Length: 357
Image (cartoon, rainbow, N blue to C red; front, top):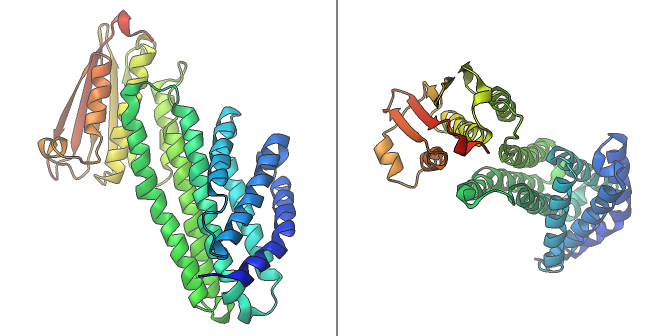
């Protein structure tokens, strides 16, 4: 279905949207607008995004798609290389969407025409911006994990599942919200503003999920302690998480970096499972550094499960990935769990000089 009049209306607002989005991003101190190179890419992103939406509204969804995807992926890789966090990109995208929404609504005084001119634009713009963010994030993540060894392929597969399971649902919710907003007659009904706010919230949630996924992939550095790494991951999880108690026995400096990194990734996976699958309210992490061995246990009070059933299926708990990480440093992993009885994961690895780095 062609929305020629909506496309023309968006084009008439393009210059104002571009200028206002840059000004607002600069006013808020966003690095995307302050850095000359990032500002140029942000400007190009806005312009091509609007052009793509106009083409879609005219019934030409494939116009310039390859170039737009290449640009988004390039933006993601460049921002990762320059150390520009996804939080900055997320904020800039929200600014663009908010500014565009405000201008499109403000310039059209005849509210009876909102369903014809504004609603189709907002629906297409929301979907396009989120798709661009997802593509840019893929480029960002490509850069971050380009140096990861092939033993970490499971991480790539997990990221794919996370983007599908967590982000796609919010994008869909946002799109539905904008469609309902259009059906309600936009401003013609009292619930129009509520529907628009719900769509904006879903849009924000989708970007937040992307930010969490990317932060979830950052690998430990040589100087990072297990305590610091666990605390950082708990910050990524946010307020909705179990109570975590972490105890370290012995000298952590005796644990080689490679073993310490794999232990953290195992702990991270266990925490993720406890929160998302087991509904745990408390998790206890104990790490013991002994002269020849390091032992780590992660215990939660969640719903528990049958390990033999889960490991023989294609479940999402990541037990296979954790076991492979333990094996990669010459260690072993055992799981003690039963339905309704919580879960305890025990990891042990030798502190041999061969695992120094």
